[in-house]
Length: 338
Image 1: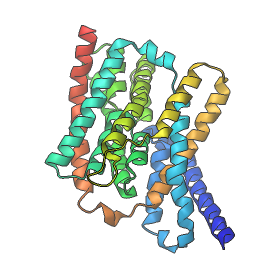
Image 2 (image 1 turned 90 degrees about the vertical axis):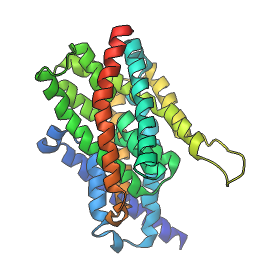
Image 3 (image 1 turned 45 degrees about the vertical axis):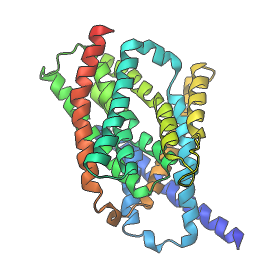
């Protein structure tokens, strides 16, 4: 009997693998490339479509394989994400980029939590997931925070949806505003502005490249530092929410996958591996994260969105407005005084 259950787990893993493979293939089509939609986003959409149509036909014994993807593969994917960063990139960014990124992340998380919980009446998990997706690195940040909060999958799906919507809007709006002369920044400042305030890495690349290669280069470096800030953010969230039973002493559960992320980034900074090897690892990592997102989508039913989706979207809209306006003044102040 255990061997049959294990076999069903393998079949579930194969199913999720096929969804991730399809998401990767679709992401290479011109339509999706133009929108800069990553395989992660396409994967969760495919998974959600499956969850609300054919998911009920799967045997219960397959659930273990799907949950394995949402937990274990997720953490492994976040660890390997460190191969996208080197400490030298952070150093090349300068004090302006460091301060601007920290201010954007801290203030966005604070605003998202307070406005979501206190004003909109959202639950703490949805508020934090939505704020983290806006503040740090989109869908990858949502997944990482979910790994700490251990919340219901539909809350993560809602947060990812808001990141896709407003991050895509930002990807087109920032270059348009710059070309129209509405943003009085030079290319260096514009790169800092995009890197510090646009949601996803892919969206930062798209927005920066639409203006100039040098804008894209500086924007990506700033963005990767924001990704790096994911680790202390996870530590703080773990301290805030990982507790024992009510009335007992608070305990801190360390998100070890976040530590792994830093260790991998440090190893990558030594440049011991060739560019081709790093590219291959990044490709595998993207696929693992796509599997995690696809499995997350498979656990998401639309009926669970009632009473949450609209408020989360309003929160994401407020955060988008903050990133555009607040990010502008933060970058302006940092470039003037630092």
